[in-house]
Amino acid sequence: MDKSQKDTWKNEADQLKKDLNSRPKKVIRREVEVRFPGTPATPSTSPKFQSKKPTNTKLASDFLRRQLGI
Image 1 (cartoon, helix red, strand yellow):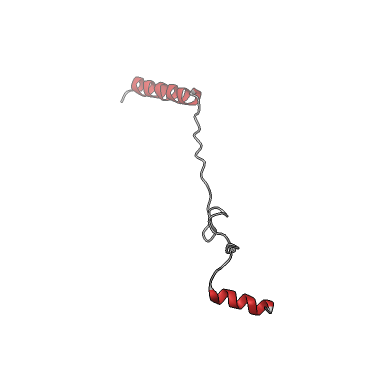
Image 2: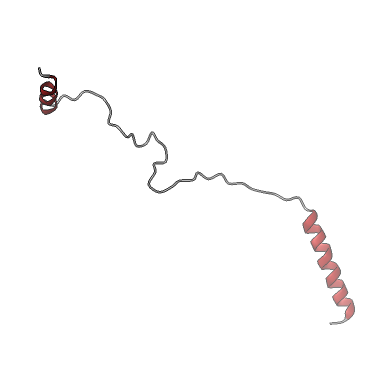
């Protein structure tokens, strides 16, 4: 390797650094939903209470009648 080849490589390396530093930077953001273990993804997917629709079973009916004293 002679001196002229080293100088050529150094000049090319410096030019490449300038070109890379002057090009526009492009940032791509990826939005990701963060989830923790043990918690539901949305509150509507797992209701904490049962629905309040009336039950028509004889056992439930008898229990409620006894509670009301009817």
